[in-house]
Image (cartoon, rainbow, N blue to C red; front, side, top):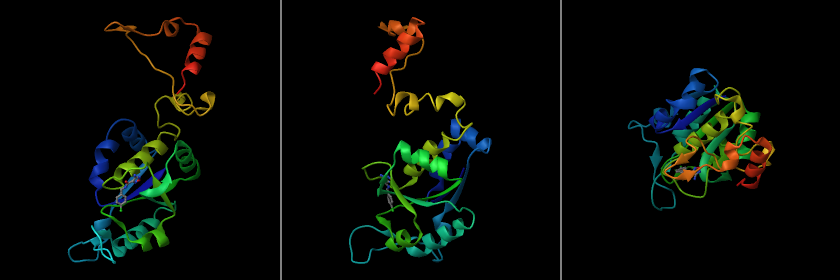
Length: 215
Ligand code: 4FM
C-alpha cells in the first residue's frame, strides 16, 4: 500500500513511522509513505499558503493555488482516492478501515490546517472526507496517521504474528465484539490475582469465560 501525505508539517509523522511495527512495514516495503509539503507548491514569493476568508470571520483559509498544484502533481504518481481529514467527514470505523485496505493499493491523504481549506478544493479534487471523531484538532496530521496505522495493520505480514489480526477485537469469532480481559505473568501482582480459570488449562472453560466478558 502506498500513501501520499499532503501536509504543511511532514515532520510530525516521523517519530511514529520510525519505530516499531510501522517502521518494520516500511523497511519490508509492505507500505510506502511519501510526503509532499504543500508549502513547496506555493507560487507566492513568501511561500504563503493561506489567506483571509471572503465574507469575513476569524482565522485563515488554505488557498486554492498550492493545494490544486500539489494535489494535481501527486495524482500523477498515485491513482488512489484523495481523502481529506476533517471533523465534517464521515466517521472513521473499523469497517471503513477494512474497506480502504481491501479496495486500494494507493491512497492520498490531505491534511489541512487553520480554519479550513477553500471549498473549491473540496468540490474539485477531494473524493472522500473522513473524520476520526467528533472533536476539533489543530490539523489533519494525527487523523492521517491513524488511518495509516489502522489500514497498515491489516496488510498481511505487517503484524509480526499473522494470527493477531483474526484473534483481535473485531474478529469474526467474536461477532464484531471488542475484547475480553487480558492477563499475563505474574499470576499474582501486589495481591491482585489472575482469574483461576485462565490458569486451569481448560480451554473450553477459558473460551466460555472470555465470551461472557466480551465488551
Ligand atoms: C482539519 C483542521 C482540517 C484544519 C482540521 C483543517 C479531524 C478530525 C480534525 C482538524 N480530522 N477528524 N476530528 N481536523 O479535527 O479528522 Cl483545514
